[in-house]
Amino acid sequence: DGGITQSPKYLFRKEGQNVTLSCEQNLNHDAMYWYRQDPGQGLRLIYYSQIVNDFQKGDIAEGYSVSREKKESFPLTVTSAQKNPTAFYLCASSKNSATNEKLFFGSGTQLSVL
Amino acid sequence: AQSVTQLDSHVSVSEGTPVLLRCNYSSSYSPSLFWYVQHPNKGLQLLLKYTSAATLVKGINGFEAEFKKSETSFHLTKPSAHMSDAAEYFCVVSGSSASKIIFGSGTRLSIRP
Image (cartoon, rainbow over all chains, first blue to last red):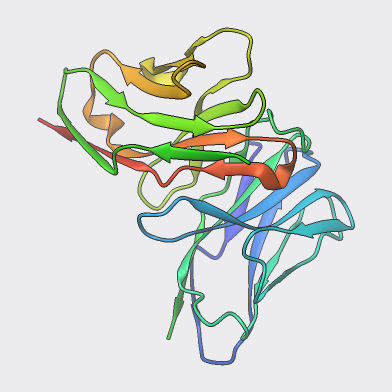
């Protein structure tokens, strides 16, 4: 089945620790996105990538980093500089970066601070 | 500049009655508009999208939405609610670039037996 796989489903971070969230897609999509979802709020864009080896900051990139070395993979690292990391993180992809393309979402990773 | 406002944070209806989830948008040009649904602890799934082909858009699971330019609205409706419709619904407006996909704050739909 084609789709987007996020792992792990639940992740706990200790003080001062960096953690990496995985996102893999087998849809052959060019564009990939990372969103943060807080309770009662819409999704906010952290980073996006329109093509391999290229990515841009979204609205709330501070404290996060990404890489796009392969078309299928777009991992997100939550660094120790992110002081309020507890949230639900969603990865998405689209065929290309045209804004009328539908987004396909993974099932999310819930990150909590110990 | 673009924005999207979902007018109700929570809507509760009885099973078998109509559903109306309200969305207003602001855009300086013809936008693409979407409705997505999110079941608890899951990713979002596209219900329907408007891209200027027709003002009445039909989606999955019996949902539809009407684009009204004069009212800058894109309300989501369904004639008869089902228990499985209970979820969070997001109205989305997209603009000139990938970074200009704006999500509303969501409407939680509850269905009473």
